Length: 231
Image 1 (spheres, rainbow, N blue to C red):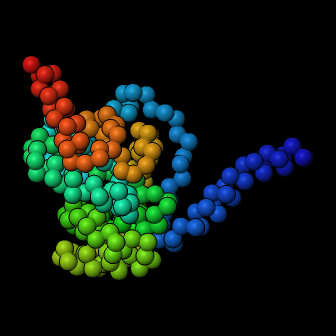
Image 2: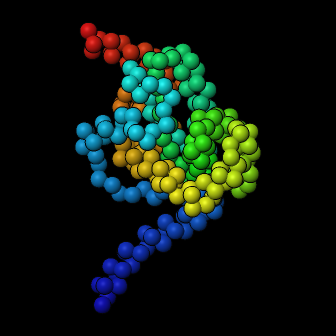
Image 3: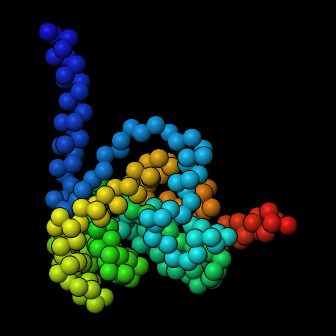
């Protein structure tokens, strides 16, 4: 009997601690526990680090350089990288494509709702436009329980169907969007993402560059590599 009680204690004690930790987050958040998933074999990891059918992508999925960014929209560092990514797109044009995957952190209580806002806008063809508003106006809604009001204002600014946006953001219509975000979060765990932002260039994880020049150097090296592979 004593052994059974001890086993039950060990099963439920971690759940209790995680529940207490989760309660610290805002009621807006939908945290994703770090599920102990088995490591992916190299071929499985490589598949996840290529453009997927569900990915949001700017540019040609067959571009010589593909950047995958795992992002938390409430992360100040992610917001700081946004203009750098925009400049890289302008600089390299068709040679570069950029994929965003959601990775909202439990330490940022409005990150999950922000991802939901991006996905809800995406349903109406304005994913990247919403991403732009979320990242360039991050201080307006970050760590504010009233963040939904800001998101609704952004939807209005983008000319979205506001009623549909609100249903997608808060109602049962948004369940597929939640699943979509959680799929990105699970892929982040499987490929070894350890924070936000995390960048992968053509399937290889890179240290976060300090500035535009460092990012450009990595891209130039990849372009040279691709050119030599073809010759």
